[in-house]
Length: 102
Image 1 (spheres, one colour):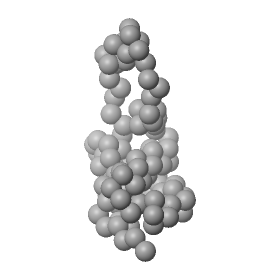
Image 2 (cartoon, one colour):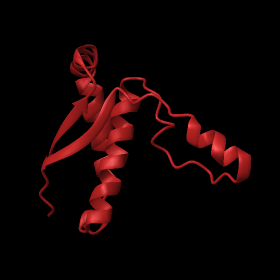
Image 3 (tube, helix red, strand yellow):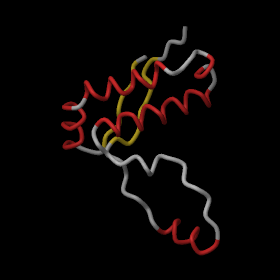
Image 4 (tube, helix red, strand yellow):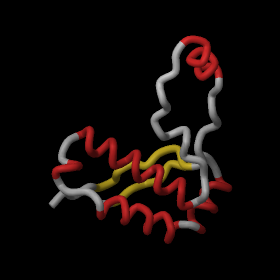
């Protein structure tokens, strides 16, 4: 598997390069928990990308709460939540360049 990390800017690029061994290690731990059946369909691949994204963010010490599912809110709490837009994470996305399933 080959992945590319989409980052927000130059400072983040430098930070990602500095933490690349930790990022790779975290990603390998995520991959070691997966089977071919887990990632055989698009939903599984999307879930894997989310998990790798969180692993990369954790490696650089970034907040991952924006990527984790939020509990359902109702009424005024739901309207307030919609108005609060969190800043984008320093690593915007994980993209698969190659993915070979054996």
